[in-house]
Image (cartoon, rainbow, N blue to C red):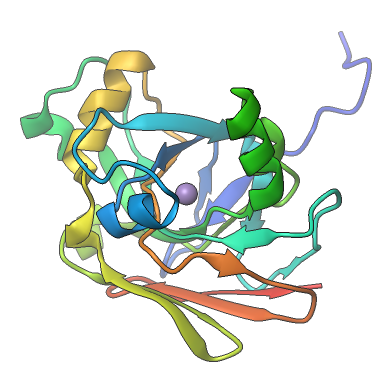
Length: 228
Ligand code: MN
């Protein structure tokens, strides 16, 4: 048997201090997980149940890459996010046990075609074209929990051309890492290779061609992307 078309290459992420790779299976994203970002988007900052959207696995863009400005938008926004890398199969996981399912953490950008998202919201349509476009999920290398521990109280920041645009702390997440994993595992069977982008703090905004974006979470590698 042979494939009738060339099978696509699997997306991977590098592991800090290792030549090994993390194979990406799915990319889940949490919507509005910081109160001040929910407010700036005109949303509700209270603890309503978390909601999710996804990006295709091949939307991953590795650290140091050029990010091609996507078509069909005039309002491309960055969103700095802590990324969870799942390490084992999880279904109906309890909050108490949820952290056992984390392989490691990374830093990512949830790039968003904000104009398309606004149009989708207005019509009650899905967000795929706003969120799931090519290269829309830049991500740093992963820091394994076995070496680095968990991230629960860390500064998260983003700069554009050296100017700070986002500066918050992961302890301000409305739904914690453990709560997100537990809740998501009720909706989907989590598997090794699943990434969860945990939402962005306030300060989102547009970028244009030529902009250099740096994102960091204390304790993890910085992610650097140039918009071209
Ligand atoms: Mn986001």
